[in-house]
Length: 488
Image (cartoon, rainbow, N blue to C red):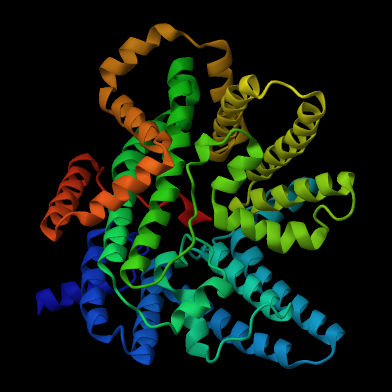
């Protein structure tokens, strides 16, 4: 009885232990899932029902009773999109689309921005504000954007509404991407639901490779670096300028490995099941300018912001000055999407300004025919360090702590700390070197490594996976670390 009770308690939602890809429980549940899936994946209806039910359970294990919000969003947006599609009047269809967008956004505003809005309102009237205890459902920003894009695509007649509510539920709740992306477009994913799934060896090998790569990025590199970064940003004044500099570079690598590691695992899991999600990261720190960075970083979000905010605003169709304004406003919205805090708005605004400056500079460089051999390395140096600099505001708990860290780096940078740092934090420094090296490896070499992995016999793949898991167990802290983007 005790064992059964223990299993039952494990299967129930625990707010202190949300279900994560890098947890032992997920590994056990996914093993059961794949074992059953192997028998039913050729039966379309059974496959859709089974995976959808598991996906809702996965979300229940992540956010508890707020799975009901996901259920509501699923049912409402499914039937509302059909209503829009069947409405003949263009004006009426427009108002129906606006209503659904406002309703979907209202949930996001309530759960994510209520305290932020009230805190600012109370500040304006010089009153004390007591923060409300509002739980933020994991992944609400991601599936809200998916519902909005789906309804708008139906409104624009880009896609037909789903055949039935189970198809839409499968699309919206598909567990690999549900809580932290990539943000999946209905036009890309819905056609895959009814395709005949053929689980090819090369595709499964690619999926396993991506899962292993994601685990290395997240559970080995990101989680270990996080231990040092958390210490420094808790009180930057307690550390030297050099240590703050290492924390800046460390967090830049941590957030990349954490988020792209999740995306790798999500894409890998989907591949093993016969589905392909869009690429979400493409070596973003290789970018030679800030525009290129946003074509490589969180691709599903940046393309979503472009297609559903920037272009509908007017894009580049209303003159250069308005284009710059639309670009800036889009990045402001992107910054606010990341968190209910002025530091995220500032982060987005600074990226918007950088995009504006880059467009002017690029035009000037072309007009004056400046030497590209000089500009190319300079562009990479400026872009990389500008992005790293802004990550300070992304990571620090407040503007004050961010400026403390910057002050230590600018006015108290002593390179004499370099050797003592390596001596005392050798493993940290080694993982940072490995992490950046793996990031900057040429794309062709990465593809060759992936193809080579696919040719290995199954026992070799298993050995590599066991070695990775063993390394994770050796380096992990007391508890499994959640993914950074779960809070967004």
